[in-house]
Length: 153
Image (tube, rainbow, N blue to C red; front, side, top):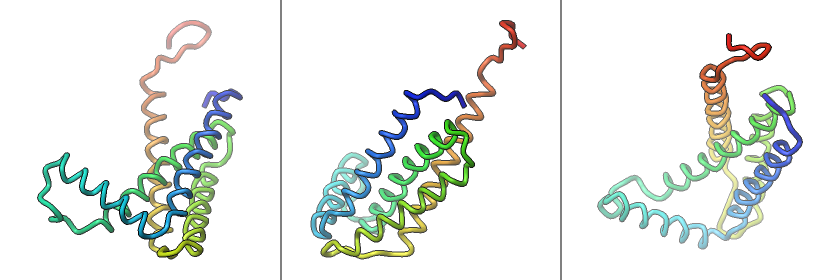
């Protein structure tokens, strides 16, 4: 990957913002978090014309939200480790540590609690983000014309 200081700083800032979003949501009390999930669920029901509460429930929506947040984190961590020429497993390790920290935060929030299943879901989200970046970058490289000494090969 092409590496520049600006890109590294941008990616690092995006990682910090992503972690602030994830951990900020974990700091919300259980009632507040549930009401946000209810609002998002109601909005999706209206947008997608789903009959009221015909799906398995808001728990699934919450797990999908966690998975998605951590997939974005996985993409950013993969981007950063690629630019820094670090081993790819470092992105998974850092993402899984962030998931553990996320669940630890919830130990101290009223109406919330930690869960090993949530750490697994979050870690799978990180891995999915890594896969998306890996295949996306590979596709991009294959589609880009390669030049050698100013001539296309």
